[in-house]
Image 1: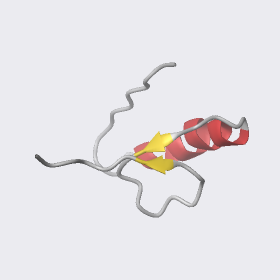
Image 2 (image 1 turned 120 degrees about the vertical axis):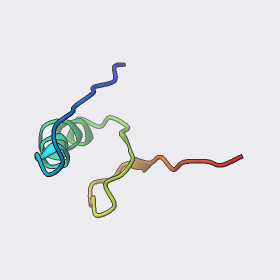
Image 3 (image 1 turned 60 degrees about the vertical axis):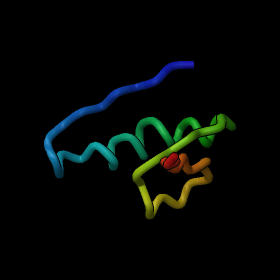
Length: 53
């Protein structure tokens, strides 16, 4: 298991890149994918939400 960090300027296409090149292939391969901060994503993922104490 690995974590991929992708950084760019605001509006630089980070979300679009990750959906098409990381999330979509992983879902198609049957992997469990956790996401955060992509509210309109239609692919089946587990949405990680922040908790407060």
